[in-house]
Length: 284
Length: 263
Image (tube, rainbow over all chains, first blue to last red; front, side, top):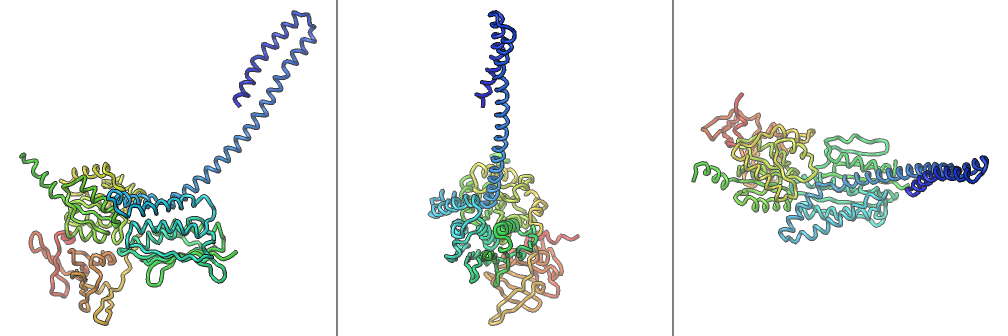
């Protein structure tokens, strides 16, 4: 583009003197007034042509830039959104607490350092690309869940036990990414870490006889402060006092975006104490 | 030796501290960092959760408490608030991870804190600040801490107390209890209908009871305030409670004598 400006500028600069020179040359060589006018006209035609061409190019470039900027803006927006989701997911609190244990065990040359570092690395690797895609198979997300639980188990010791039961048919089912992780994190944070003696987290995923995807996340903590049930026609207000309100509400919104009325999500008290988070997706 | 040097040396050698974190890694990291940076500090307890932290504080009365915020049983904020209401509140340094909701308030108020993972530079700064504050009583943080407690914290649901008596399980409503007393690994429940032993330690029990009704008057005694007839000062250090319609007297430890000050 700069080249074009330069050429155009140079041309305009040269065009004036050139026209004057031609007029002067014509007068001294006895050309008649008509021929001199014609020559001047011929010489200024390229100027007009260049001006027009320049205008066309400039307009086209404007359009192009506007489109390009718009694309960039959209890309930035979508990046910001995944960034928000990702940072909401990998809480700095989790990261720094894990690093605190890691740092101590490295300094002390404790054997627990290497496995914790491995689990943390695998967790980050599994989690960071989570939000680039609209859907993730349960098998893929279960990997992130598994690594998360390994990290927490290294930190909490015998205060945390866990089991993952995913049937082969359910493993291929697709869910909005981060959903299971959010629910499992809630179970650990509210059901295990708040208990003096810890507890157990279980994740069950299966397809029922009708082909509906049934997922349950159980803990044996103190149970939910409020029982909640989300379905297409009923979105309860999640009380602010409920720490997990936001994560749960986001999970629900993403479920509904993906499956509409086919999805439901609930949080209930488990018989014998604890909490059951259930996700159900009816077949299409 | 100059006279002015005396109290300082004495203080340095006698300074006691408690650290509390429910995760072993950060707890031990803090302990070894403190040993390195403040070798004279005597760490009297490393508590595994908020309930232990409170109990260990009552047992040892350390001058400084390093408290993690998110702990089961009682949060670091709740422990600090309880400590602040005793006769000799300790100097509190919160140990917290990035992203904690209380951080902004800490920055604004007169609260000392260090971030996890603890690094030597920051911990040294915190140590210097605490050392400078030590000669004076700990600042009163009650109002600030109160704001940091979850606003809608639902009061604990009054649960029936189930006491095994041979083959029988006795159901006791909390409001029928006159006092709880720690008895080795058991807790003695003295209620309107008699006495029973339960296996839940007193320190765990106190987090599930209504603190307005059951007052802790001693490390090992929780008493139903409606059953107290009077508080009697015996001498400068000791105080006893008499109960309505009962002969036994309950001791009030020095830490809790502020509960009974008359109006």
